[in-house]
Structures are given as structure tokens and as C-alpha cells.
Length: 213
Image (cartoon, rainbow, N blue to C red; front, side):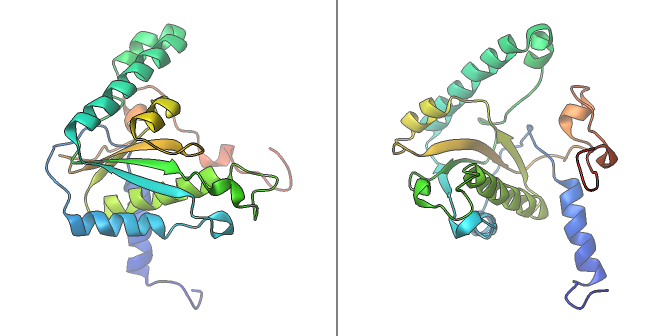
């Protein structure tokens, strides 16, 4: 064992929460205590970021009318996505793809409007702002699972429409609507695998040495 390794039980807990994290769509209402939400957002804020730019911005949606407006944006894009899927359109429309109206808490994650000034690590790969924010979302996701809360990442929306709805400044970019809250149970497998939409690829198909494939 390496000198700085955690104890076996702590390591097992880390790997367990990673393995049991699920993209949840079914929520059971309820609430998320303020201290728990603060812990989750703190976990997100501890994420690594390229050049320590911390591009993430979090908007907590407390107004029910605003939540319904966000749901309407998601529904518009759900229909457009179905149309773009062609022969799988009907199959897609039968899927439950969000829990915006059912979850205890709704968060919108965006990239800040000032991120273009950050050059460190972004000169040739400007998309590292998005990668950094995705790390923050993953931190929040894992922390939520450890707290026994479900979370789902919704990406079915027009970013410009959501930015306008929330009064975000020019240059900012919403990237996620996060549904968060109690669930009656966690899926045994990823939901899209369980319903036959897709089959996860094995790790061996995605790892190579000294070159592509």
C-alpha cells in the first residue's frame, strides 16, 4: 500500500459511490436540507479546474413558476430531439428523460461570462472550461449519492433560451439543469441500459497503449 493511501474501508466507500452513482429521472418529492445542499455545492466547488479558473456558476431555482418555465424549455427540446432521431423517435418519446417538476431541488449550472480571460491551459484547448465544470458536476453527483440523494443531469434545452430566461449575462453559457432530491430507490443499472436504449461498452474496448487502438 502506498504511504498516502486511505484505509481499505475508505477506499471501498469511494469506489462504491462511483459504481452506484446513477443519472436519476424518478424523484419522490421531499426536501434537501440547507446544510446538505451546502455540503454538495462545496463538494462541487472543490473540483479541479484548469488554471484554477473555476468557471462554474450555480443558480438555485426556488420559484415554482420559473421551474415550470424551465420544464417547458426542456419539453420543446425533447420533441425536437425525437424528430432528429428519425426511426427511434417513438422509442425516445416513451423514455422518462427528466424530473424537473418532481425533484426537491433544481439547479442550473453555467459557465461564467469572464472565462475568456483565462489563457492558462486553454490556449489550444478552450473547451477545458467545460471539462472543468463537468468535474464540478461529477463531484456534486458523487456527494449526493453518498448523502442518499438522487441527481439527474438534463441537457435537453436551448442554451440561449435558458440564458435569457434566467437573465444571465452575455458570454455565460448554461450547460446543465440538475434535478436533485430524495428517490424511492436507485436504479440497479443505468436507466438507458435497463430499458434497452443503449449498451455500455467494456473498458477493454476503450483503452490502448502507445497509440490509438
